Length: 59
Image 1: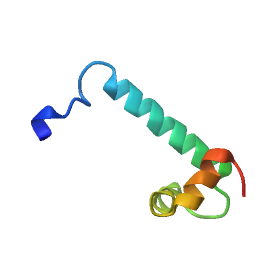
Image 2: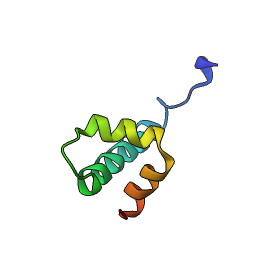
Image 3: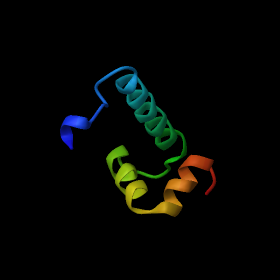
Image 4: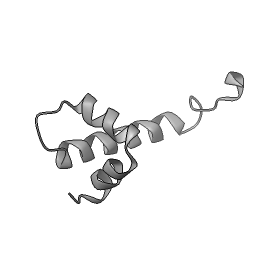
């Protein structure tokens, strides 16, 4: 399976880097409180509602 992974070919690395930057910017803009970016990221991975709040900018 790992041999079929194509994230290192064509434009995939740039696309993944762009998605990562977008996600971090959403956390920076909408993530309030004293939590670190890592804690916001972990919370967003575990909590669908929190992730949706970050994406839409709602509280």
